[in-house]
Structure formats: structure tokens, C-alpha cells
Length: 164
Image (tube, rainbow, N blue to C red; front, side, top):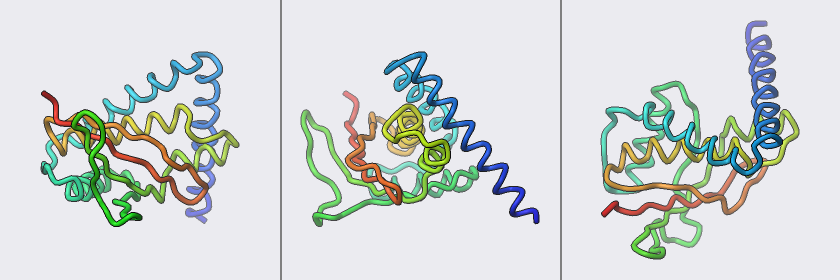
């Protein structure tokens, strides 16, 4: 019985998050995306305070996932080597690694409320990831870009650059 009660409460929280994001987007427009990103980035930096550091992106992803799990944040993501390469070169010294995000509370919240992906809550989760990853890979600026958002997983690119 306790499990059913917990799931009901989680479902209600998910619905609330979806409604909150929808309302913010209606009132703030696209400004809600940067608002969500900045709030998430601060949270991510705090969640990864004092973690092990690495300049190896695959190791950094594993470190971050483990650090978030220790904080009680279950977020299943991993490198995606669909084309056989883990890291590629981007523009202006940027490096790119594709990641697959399987379990995502944001996706669950949006589906519960009936709101579309690639909106404010996704940008907030991107901020969490970027803020935390910048703690794991110090001296780098990090961002995420969505390549595909789906019901079972999202494919994203982690793009980072060493700060001058």
C-alpha cells in the first residue's frame, strides 16, 4: 500500500511541475528557458560540489552520474557511440559527445501533464547537467543540445570547450 501512495504523490508532483512549467512559458515566453537553465545550473553546481574531477569526458559522465545518485537523483544517461566515435570536434575548439538519456523525471512530468518536450523543464535539466559537469570537468564551459526527444529516451549532445 505504501508503494501505491508514494507513486500517487509522485504523480501529483509531476503534474504540478508540468503545470508550473506551462504557466511560466505562457507568462515569460522564451525567457522562461533561460530562467530554467540558470536555476538548474546553480542546483547542478551545488549537487556536484566536491566530486572527483576528470578531463576525460567518458569518465566525467560516469563520475557525474554516480555523484547525482549519491544525492538521490536517479538520472540514467550514458555516452552514445552510434557512429563508433565517442568524441568529435566541433567549431571553435568545441568538443562534442553524444549522450542518451533514458530515465528522466522531466520527461515523466511532461507526459503526466500532457506538455511537450524541449521546453522550460528540459532547459532546467540541461542547466543541472551543465552546472554539475562543469564541477567534474573544471575549466570547461558545458552545454547540452537536444537532437531527439522521445517517449523512451532522448539523444543529446554534450558540447564543451576549455575556457581561455
